[in-house]
Image 1 (spheres, rainbow, N blue to C red):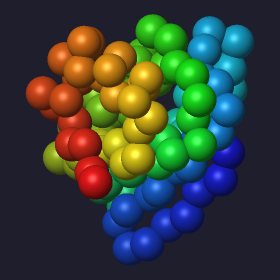
Image 2: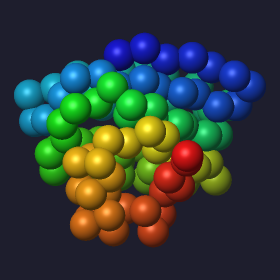
Image 3: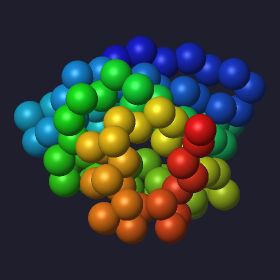
Length: 100
């Protein structure tokens, strides 16, 4: 997991799998970074994410709720076809942006 900060935007790059065995670790790392209240936008770069289950949806929704409280936003970029399908089926694109 890597990240970079540009202004009020944090880009978090996920690689490999996001399942129940890694969700707590990723959630913890994201939450630690998001303690900086000047971050208003989170972009999750999923280009190298090969698998995600419902635990991953929970991680994304939790960070959306956190940022929504401070009038911030969450977006995903480069989801694989498999991950994109999970997002579409869950309806998550109704509240987060899918970037091209």
